[in-house]
Length: 318
Image (cartoon, rainbow, N blue to C red; front, side, top):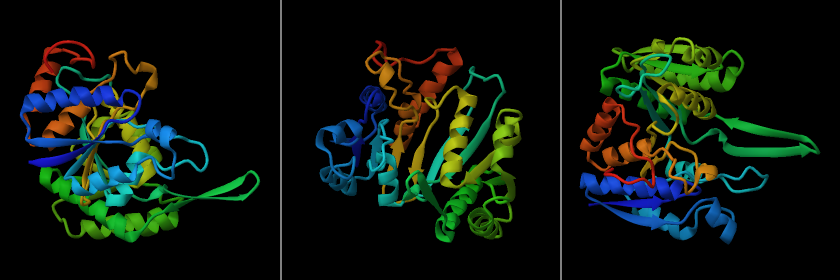
């Protein structure tokens, strides 16, 4: 039996997680959940340099997987890193994977899409290296390394190979960021491409990619799309709009010692307690990760019927 560390999160997080637990129970997945503290609400009560207490870190070290509900990240200077960033960096979760696929009977106004976004999860501007040079003058360092770029692009090619797809699309701004994107990230992607002759590497500038997502998204179907941390964070959220919202989107962070899967929705304190959170991504990803693929079949059946699914807090079988 696998041990799963469970961080319920802030705002709607506990509601979404409770809905997820109903689905996991119904799927008969053989997992043991261990509840952990973490998030802004915990930090506001206890303070300290991290939003994750030491006891939670010990539980995470001992667990096979971490399930995390939405957590709030304060934006004030000198406040701690987010829970998600802290976990990614601690366990070297360098491949953040987000499939973007249209659900049956729920085709968006821009048509059907089916592609996968892979985001490097441990460096870039999320390294959190900032300096105040003078009053009103600050800098943030975008850390890009050959080792992490090679790892995440290797994952992208392996994912394309696993799916039987023929294209990896590398997103960058190499015409402006000539060292970090042109000299490091794209070089790593081109080197990896030589090892996968059956998969074609294409390159695209991120501004063009952002435009094409809302103009001709089918252009990217059956592509694995890979890029650096902040770029793909923004673009993957834009892409989630093609399938409804970030709520139905699935999100997992892989390729470290610990698997970290988390809810797509934000914490949304304004709808906390109203049963309006969207737990679909939460349900599906967790059941699939727990070895219960039939859970996805049940939810897809709901979408084919045209159902909206069950809202958190409402009656009915999950």
